[in-house]
Image (cartoon, rainbow, N blue to C red; front, side, top):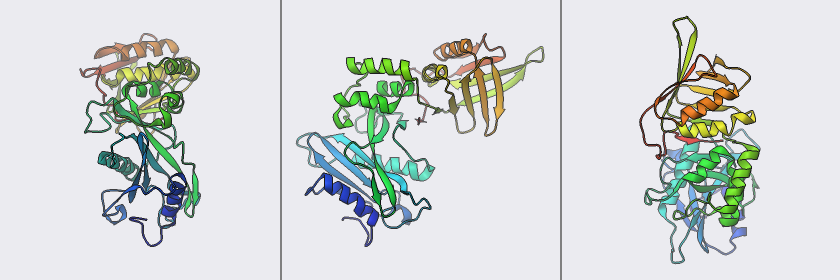
Length: 352
């Protein structure tokens, strides 16, 4: 096997699974010159791409333990998964696009540097086109599901699953925030076989059957997005002229409408939402009365009655300004910034 070492039982286990799916097929393989553990910039030791009718099936080597058992978790190999990516392929395309290899290396680099692993149901806003060579593509977010053709396997170093990266359009990702990525992808699969990422496709949210499933699903299930990473989630507590405390929540104008949509699809179902920036966070949930509690890790917990939630979501759809909430006396929402509302915004990543 190209780019493997003398003893690579983890690598061999992955290769055996792929050989069973693609008997006799020699993939395009791309190895890493300087390995991550030797100071290189690319965490994946190898990536294989298999040509299919209509798409490339790309599989990584490196998020699991390929050569020896190093982690203390005996049940899972490395991070517990390898990535796969199905990318649309023209009939005359003999080589997979190199940007896809860099894209998968970037996802793996995020895992290695942050320690945040992915699982089915997780999703990310790319905040721009998934491929810089195709700036006009509507694919600007991703979700993770189990690869439909590669079952989890047991290796000498533990179990691993094959986690497929699926490209989503902006409108599809807006639905993910308000609903559930796995259920949306299940509704899309009949019209997007094997969940192939196609940079030229339009969103499926307006397809009659998909739209009906979305409407019913949001009404039935609400949102599974538990927290949003944002550039700014600040608060301050001041005293009014009567000496009573007043709390002001400060949020940016760009992600504000999206925050409001997730709140409306989550809090009425009894689920909270955490807005988290690098410095601080604001946790919101529904309750019988308005309360504010400063918790550890620079988190402010806010409990809102239903009427205050309605006021808050309305304020988040408004222009920049200051909005006192009548149903939550002592609470004001401050929307700052004057950015166009059709941009991706400052929600830098979202996992739910």
